Image 1 (cartoon, chains in turn red, cyan):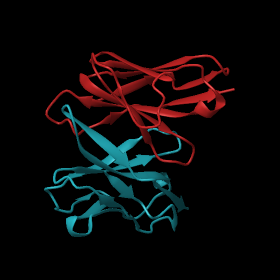
Image 2: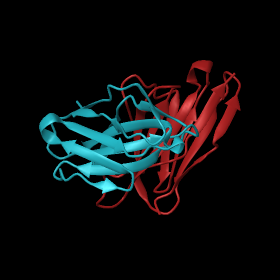
Image 3: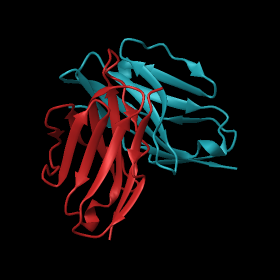
Length: 117
Length: 117
């Protein structure tokens, strides 16, 4: 149980285009989902926290207009990188917090490797 | 604010040696959770162990064991009889309540473990 999927696993896009990454909790409902970014040989940095049906909360330094997050249902959150640039190339990982008493748990997706050319 | 320090950036051991990964954390919260994750080259985070702040009992699970000491704010992780498949980056993480029913994870910078055959 507690499986989180991400799609796509890898994406290459041209500079200036937008790309959408999906994060789904497959066998549980997630009131809260998190989006992380990981640059090569670095740690995971929290970008934003999204709660179903409300606006995402972004960490300091993360551009809201560039990284659009939509948590439309209890099993799906999307991250859209708008007008992508080469510096946005990174590994993006989502996690989901189950809607149960064990809210300290986070289940991670396999990640999406974004390359902007 | 929360902070997790993994002082060891890289460690190399010869197969079958034991290896301990260090983790020191900082938080003012009295209730928190500590995690160890493994990230192999594929990128997917693999959950290893979790401990809550009220349980300092140290345990052994197969080749893994951990030493949680609140007095020194440390949560060290040991792999016994290391194997080549243990080669990965290991992250220590701290989870505290962030409001609205959810917890937020703070990751250390990671320790890259290389097990040499």
